[in-house]
Image 1 (tube, rainbow, N blue to C red):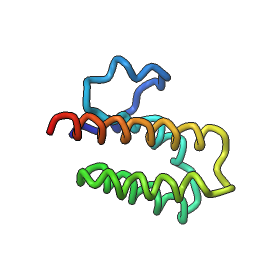
Image 2: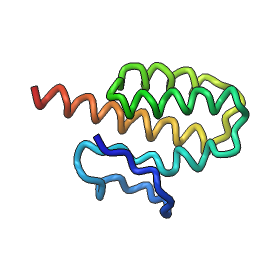
Image 3: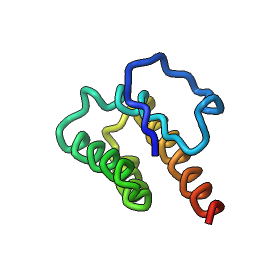
Image 4: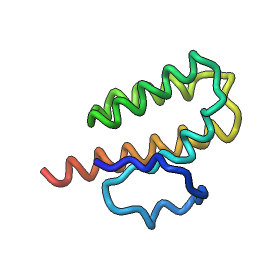
Length: 96
């Protein structure tokens, strides 16, 4: 699995990503200044992704999405990352 976590300009076009990758650059940026309780969930999400525990990552993303303190950009990043993980799970299931 590949995670993109470097600094680069964000675009909404994820079609240029190699198949099976998760681009978390904007996700990291949007939560850079978040309070500690939110950053804890962000870290759990990224650790789950790194470990291939995508179901856990989705569970933590749901918890994060339910937080009323998130701004519009953060909500969009949560939705985008959730969609990428769901696509990754679908691709993994189709490969079996």
